[in-house]
Length: 374
Image 1: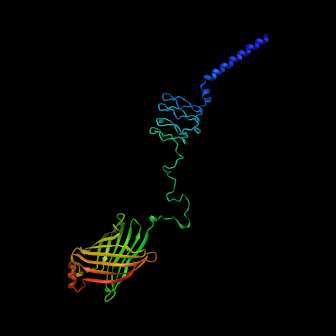
Image 2 (image 1 turned 180 degrees about the vertical axis):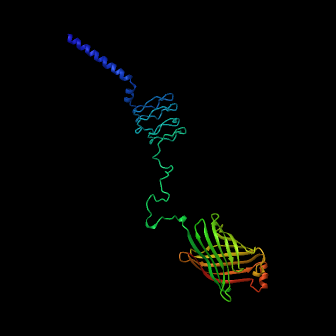
Image 3 (image 1 turned 90 degrees about the vertical axis):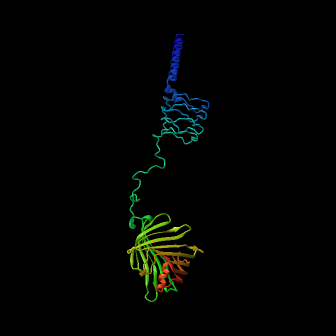
């Protein structure tokens, strides 16, 4: 009997110890938060608008299966929430409504929001100062990301450093016409050559005629000019020139380009050493009959600022010339033989001066020649 009483007393004491331990574990918040799982909880009707989360520590919480679709967190204060230890990798927030959420104080540096629907999220007040976007594309490259010559330390080899096309000076020669006029027994020519880049060039131009009989007189006007684009379709020229007809030098300035409807237009002014001013105006158009056959009509006018009887020059417009050529382009369009007809006439007071000197006032002629460029 004594042994039985002692056994009952020991059993009672053990029960009290176990009960006290259970209450102690229930009163310890750290123990409770570690065992809480909210994976099956339905938060659709929970109203947490007045809750103060400023001191909540949710670093060990598992909310992977929580349904937040109906949660109203518009009044929640997340400014002091410590979610640094939370594991968001398994959270499904695709059905959450973030339309009224204020996340201005939240730290999103470690959050995985790949499945979230941000269609209605208002993030105008968010502080992204601590967000780590180093893995994202874009932004400004580091100063030493690439070497200035784009070699990145690799030698160029035996061919040397390459040069970009925009920095490479080029050259070209264009013979607009080189033809024989049968009725006038003379060769007419017009040649342009240039060297430089698209932004600026050095241009040489010469036009005139060579007599093929008698004294074989040469009348030419040659210029050396600086060429520069003025706009998309117009270029400017400025330089010096020499006229063999009156044996005088001149300063030259002109505008050359393409008018609407692809009409080639040029206007050049020459200031001679004696004060005489010459103005040359010309225009031409290429009418393509086929891919190879081309009809090219062109006209020109010449005017002077004052009379010069020694050289048969009168004040005002002096000459008008027109020509129509039929060309056939060969050799990649670089060579084009042609036949045509030309017409020249004197204008104004120049007609009377030429009659007094027994010179022809009007002339027309068949012509044949070649146009090429390289």
